[in-house]
Amino acid sequence: MTQATPDWHQLATQWRPRSQAVIDGELVDAVDGGTFPATSPRDGTTLVEVAAAQRADVDRAVAGARRAFESGVWSRTAPAQRRRVLLRLAELVEANADELALTVALEMGKPIRDARDIEVPALVKTLTWYAELADKLLDELPQTGPDALAMITREPVGVVGAIVPWNFPLTMAGWKLGPALAVGNSVVLKPAEQSPLSALRLGELALEAGLPDGVLNVVPGLGPDAGQALGRHDDVDVLAFTGSGEVGRELLRYAADSNLKRVYLELGGKTPNVVFSDAPDLAQAAATAAWGITFNQGEMCTAASRLLVQRDVHDEFVEQVIEAIDQRQVGDPLDEGTQIGPVVDGEQLQRVLGYVDVGRDEGAELRAGGARTLQDTGGTFVEPTVFTGVRPDMRIAQEEIFGPVLSVLPFEDVDDAVRIANGTVYGLAASVWTRDLATAHTAARAIRAGTVWVNCFEEGDLSVPFGGMKQSGTGRDKSLHAIDKFVDLKTTWIAL
Image (cartoon, rainbow, N blue to C red):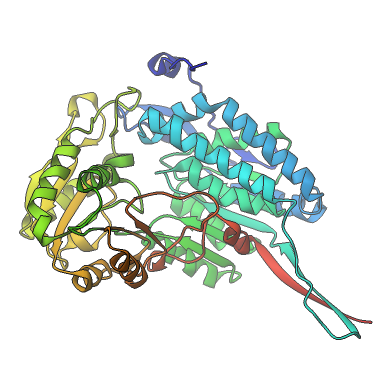
């Protein structure tokens, strides 16, 4: 039976967001009573005043997480029990999918169809995948002589601090929480101040699922307050962060200034989308290029923001991309037909428009978009933007814009494409379009990126790791490899 499409505008009038922190099993106000506004980029209205966690609140959350960890109520419970609780949490997320999707759409502007069909299912799949893994991890028994027994075991690290961004607030939370909780850690989750509401609801659902008090804490607040307090805390064992390079550097400094906690960073990107003239389907490649820079308003670390096109098909291909982008609908994120919502807030809007000015000033040709739109709504909407005539050294080809701004660069051959693709400080993802097997392998091997897609974009599942090279970060999310961030390896050598 096909599920009826909800009336999202009607649901929005009935929606009652959570605004208190989730600390040590309780929903609480900030210690000092402070709040900050959660503002919707859809129309600029304040959705609710949210508890603004300060150092005292983070201290309380970390203390609760430590008590829970040391008590063994989660860290030493049978892995099969952790599996059952995490599966129950996944079920509750799925049961509350409409509410969570609406929350994401209102707080950060994601089109409701993407929030309901992509964002929430991604969280469900992640929780389920790591839940099923919890009681199936194997330790190691190295071969020794007959006079000894050696064991290598994985132990949870303790208290994990997780700081996640606003562009995929539930997906990114799941990528941290799934592996950290599956192996028995306690977590203090700090959501982005632009998107705290979905994380707070998730924290509440975790308590309902049976996660013991203190095992998952959610502390909303501003980065310089709650984020810095978590980064500097001497009782946080591991910090996992997804966000900007600027904040990532600060978190490394906080770790150095405190207890030398391990810090795993997933930072920015400047994805090269490399289209050779022998691509198996140029029309499909063009449609994917248009989607890759406009999906989620271009607010993705993997956004296909650099389109590298072989010169002999450049002009024709660019026209196809512009035509495909023009067909992408900008509008109210609560409308089912909307494909591009508002960027997350006024600051991000000004950043995107500022880069449009930079592109013009540097001599690139503005071929589409480049302006604010739907201004009468009060929302922060921007037109999808395409620049051609872009040189590799231009700022719009070097710096992460985090918005729907596409830079098109021509190239001559494989060597030229690889040189341009590798010519930034980032190395998160790349895409290569060609029917030639040698070209595909040569380019994929030579491009310095944590993920290279061939004749596709943004494909994959939880079985493969996600992360970057160079200044795109350290460590990996997803897959078995994510477990490595949240465990210590212990060697036990027994003389027989």
